[in-house]
Image (cartoon, rainbow, N blue to C red; front, side, top):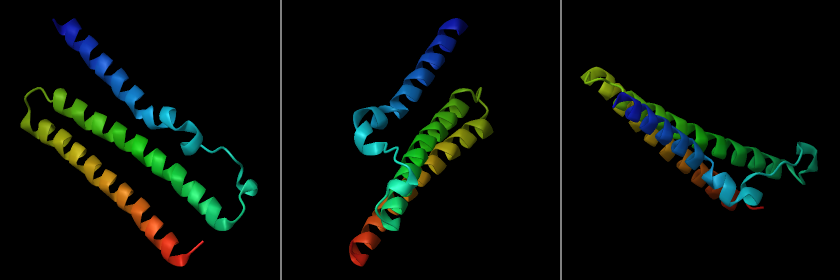
Length: 116
């Protein structure tokens, strides 16, 4: 019985890790741009390129944070303190996701106000 739980946990972990790469697989040409910094036309384009990379790194990192929180909850062993720690980890991950999405929106607003 314990072996089945291990298999289930490892399958869920593998599925979670594969799902983190989904945005990269769907729009790889739009998301990943491997040009060197000297090939950008302007400083603004370079900064937008770097922010795009940081955005996707943050999204993938948040996926790992939520997975860690889920594992903390699953392996709490009935201890309410460990379960609450996992729940707080997931909540902090959700707050981080909101901050990342808001930061992207704020950058878009600032760039539209300042012009091209």
